[in-house]
Structures are given as C-alpha cells and as structure tokens.
Amino acid sequence: MDGRQDPFESDDMALSGPPDMAQEAFDAALLQSALSLAGNEGWHRFSLVDAAREAGLPVETVRRRYPVKALLLLQLGRLADASALRDDGDGGTLREYLFDLIMRRFDIFQEYREGVRAVLQTVPYDPALAAFLAGTTLDSMKWLAEAAGIDCTGFGGVIRINALAAVWAHAMRAWEKDESPDLAATMAALDTALDRAERYGILKPSARRKMDEALNNTGLPDHDLELES
Image (cartoon, rainbow, N blue to C red; front, side, top):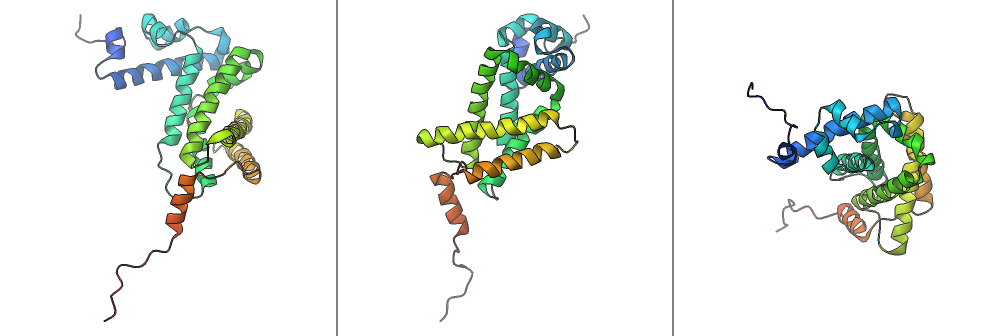
C-alpha cells in the first residue's frame, strides 16, 4: 500500500465527507463518461457499467445512485438549471432576462454537445425517454419562468409554462444543428420564438414582477436636497 486512496473507491467516500463535494465530483465524472460514450456510440449502445468503468468509478455505487440511465439526463438538466438560476436577474426586461436564462442552459448543454445530440436523435424512437424528458423539461421551464417573473398561477400559468417549453424546443432544434462557436443560430431562433411568445401574451409578468418594476420606475425624491428655510 502506498497510502494513496482513490476518491471513488468506496461508497462511503462517494456519498460522505464532505458529501456535496464528493457527490458532485462523482456525478460529474460519470456524466462526462456517459455522454462521451453516447456521442461516440449512441445513447442506447452503452451501459452504465461501461460508463462507470470508463470513468474509473465503482459500479456498485453507480448502481445505487443511478439505477436507470435516464437519471443521468435528469442530472444534466439540474446542472443546466443551476447555471441558469445562479444570477439574481437584477436589471433588464422580463424578456431579456428570460433570454439570458435559456442561453445559460445551453452553455451547459454545449459542454456535452455530442452526447446530448445523441439523446435527441434517440428521442423520436423511444416514447418512454421522450415522456421522461418532456416532464423534466416542463419542470425546468417552470423554474425559469418563475425566476424571470412570468405569471405561473392558475390555468393560464400552465399554458405559459407549456408555451415556454415550446420556445425551448424551438431553440433546441436550432442548437442541434448550430456549429457556430458563438451559437448565433441558436440565439436567433430563441429570439424569434420569444418574439412570438411575447405577441401571444405568454410573457405576462407576475404580480411580484409588476410591483418590482413599478418600484424601480418610481421617481423617488432626492433626500440630499437641502430644505428651504
């Protein structure tokens, strides 16, 4: 024994002390391995065992954390959401902020581009995967909509969230074919989709957003002015 320890050699190390850092490193290594294999071989042509061995991770821990392969895509979606929601959204219009939120999701997808494209090519032939991704996408869009200040209450809110998912899907189709380094085609497609959403009243601000905008636009008195004698 040389005293060195593989950080992923045991479940205890992968799932504890400090747990957040260990799990984050474990998940990142597995996700990178899996989507690299997907990009090279196709989504259905590799197994989680293959991904674990490629990444040098214990298979039994992968089995525990990811009993089905689709959960890797849930992890990818969470990473993308975390990237999008990291900003507090101060300044700019609702539409501008929403544009930024969505593009920050694409920044994460871009890191795993070929693997994600392999998944997109599989979806039309896998109804179960398509249904799973539809559900996770709606959940993500609800988070983005609420963060941007869209009214998500009631039946109208459900319609707006579904419409935002359609905006995402339109931009995603452009992203899948977009080979430009700055994702110009993706941004143009997203811009077009948001224009359409705005025309149809999908970007309706929430009561909280309206209040914040009203406060920001209110001309407050200058407290530094000297009182006249």
